[in-house]
Image (cartoon, rainbow, N blue to C red):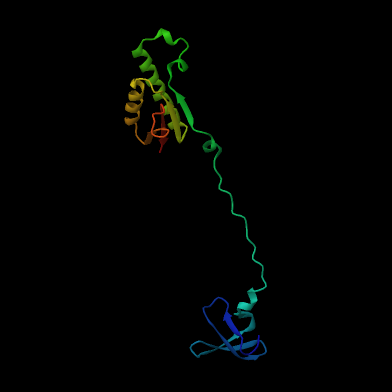
Length: 164
């Protein structure tokens, strides 16, 4: 440290220009013209040149951890009747619709219990009876959003459900 250097005091908001050095004691003048005396150990040089030769080390961004449970594809429920029972011809139309509705409610409850985020319900295109039943059941549920999985504004026969 020599006369004319700018210094800053450790642990205080005080800096100034050195006016004299007497052994271990340094005298400096702050921006308001007041003089201060400090030991050399309490002062640090305030110079931008100190940082010119220091290399900047860029650390890699930490990867965001995503649980394995949510990396999986969404659950798909196919409500085509031949996928739900062994002998589809043994049931009349009312029984078929009732079984499909019970299966839908069961899977919705399973998704909630296991904290699944998305469910795709395949109901087919058909004459719309099953489609209306699925829409009615979904409208009666809380904490879900659902929308048709349309392809280019054509009916796809599937509904995507997102749980909150």
